[in-house]
Amino acid sequence: MDPQHRVVIVGGSLLAWHGLRQTTEDVDSVRHLGAELRSAVASVASDHGLSPTWLNANAASFIPATFDPGECEVFLAHPRLLVLEAPLRDVFVMKIYRGSANDLDGMVAMWPRT
Image: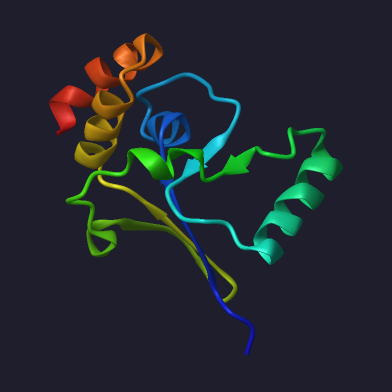
């Protein structure tokens, strides 16, 4: 059986899903994307005119030490792909750690839900 790839969604796409942000240009994950998944991402990008890094693991360096994947909610479950959404409290901490002024609006929107 082929492996199930895992993606843990954080950042702007997660905020948009929860109605806490209007738009975003990419989907951030805290899980490394293996070669097969990166190839699929590139194929989707080519088919739909997206950036080849529309799904990326750039947020992985900001993951809190207390992050527990077992606390994530299932967003999508497929035999080959499991997409989880990180708890908003962890995303809030990640944005504090990142320290970007661009994250302030998201932090304000998340605060009541943390």
